[in-house]
Length: 336
Image (cartoon, rainbow, N blue to C red; front, side):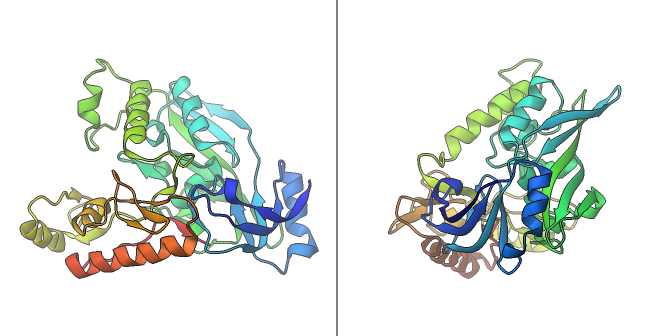
């Protein structure tokens, strides 16, 4: 396995920032990864595990070792009358995995179609879209400890999944390299179609199944979100805030058109995109970066922008939302 020095990362982050890694390695097997973690030359420098680079914002060159896993196997490891269990390598492209499941009519991840990135990154962020989060399909996560290269297995409960959150962003941040994710999928999936206009869109497909759900979601994403190959971005930059129901009711009284989504009897979710748009940021440009013209949650790099440029814009948006609505927007992406 070759270890590169001063390696360009422009092609490895979807914002397209022109940054470098002091060291870069792309292990394609567990043995190579273990050797890399045990190598004394890199113990004194920070290490960053990278998937598709679709949820990263680099502020500057990375002064350490970037580990870009290439574990790309996917195998069925168990099956019964109702479920199928798959073990997928961290380097598998996420949407390729979804397409594989849908082609075999194994349900549970079809609503997550079109999300960029890799399988290994999916539990870190607990990726979610269109009413589904990946935790509903994850049975366990396999990893190697960064400090000694020893294997560790996280049960579903041990992953401590939350809204765009997991133990891998908290107690185990920078302490483990996810190598495989084990998914349990349904042979008779119940469609989740309540989100947005999905139900209406699926009316054009009588007897719709997970194949049609995937088609609708891919079409919707293409219409709403910019392709990073054409315009640098990392998808949704901010999380949708969750408020106490009483606070959400007060906001709804002041702004009758405010969309709200009950989480439970106590909490209500508010679309961050709506808040940002009401503050006048949608389509606004600041030098070489800006807010996308059709989706206010997406910050974009028009070319030549930097991570600090995007962060400066993000902070201005957060301040506007605080001033107008008394709501703090939290970032969804990982800032390096």
